[in-house]
Amino acid sequence: MNRPVELAQSQSAVLEVNKVLKNTYALLSVTLLFSALTAYISMHMAMPAFMPLVCTFGALGLIWFVLPRTANSAAGIGVVFAITGLLGLGLGPMLNSYLQLSNGSQLIMTSLGGTGVIFLALSGYALTTKRDFSFMGGMLVVGMVLVLIAALANIFMEIPALSLAISAIVIVIMSGFILYDTSRIINGGERNYIMATVGLYLSLYNIFVNLLMLLGVMSDD
Amino acid sequence: MDWMKISTAILIILMLVFIVPRAKDMLKNSPKASSNDMVAALIPLLLVIGFVFLLIKSV
Image (cartoon, rainbow over all chains, first blue to last red; front, side, top):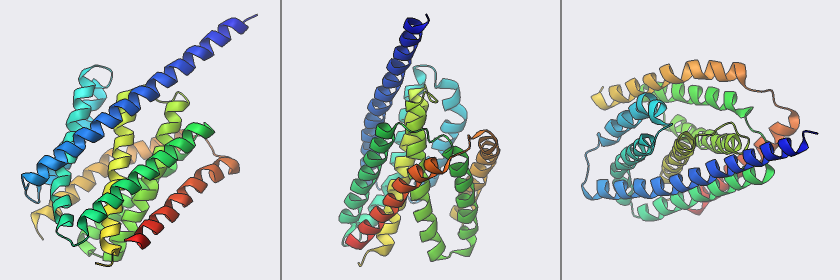
């Protein structure tokens, strides 16, 4: 008896998921372009070495204190642009130091391409299988806590092998977050495209930075 | 020790302060995974590791 109502509800849920997915990918594409622009500006302005740290502090402050309050309003879009712009700005000094290597531009392009392939493959996998990867949330966050503790210890111990291991583990954890975030959007767990965009952007950003570090250390030159 | 290292350490400690309570909460509330779910998540992650290894070999 309730079939038409259930069908209408399920159709409306599908439409809602598709809308969130479309808006997330649209905002993600634009913010990635904006981030690339601010990184380019930062490279040409030859920002000082402490800039990445300042930008990361600023971006995390926005993510923790401002984004949760603005995510449900149009102001949230401006906050997302501020976060991604700051993180892009912070990339400039690092990209400049890689460009000083003989194969620097190749490393950056490989890292960029590699990040794109990982993102497209994992998103495609999560979208086509439509599996619920929400069980990964706890494991991924605990993994991130362990990585942060290891990174904190390595600031003082300065072990290059540990630094490489941290980069490799961050790539795997962030790949897991892409599956987790995409599956949350598909299964209706995330209905706010602004929060979804920031989650996916941070995964992409971390994969790119850590892949670049790995390739830089492991390259022959 | 230079101030960059101290600032980075402060940043990481702040991240831990924010993430640890959420990690506890997520661990409590995450649904349990079946072995099929684990395999479905592990396969793409293993492929990512293989792909990164290939990228490292190519540079």
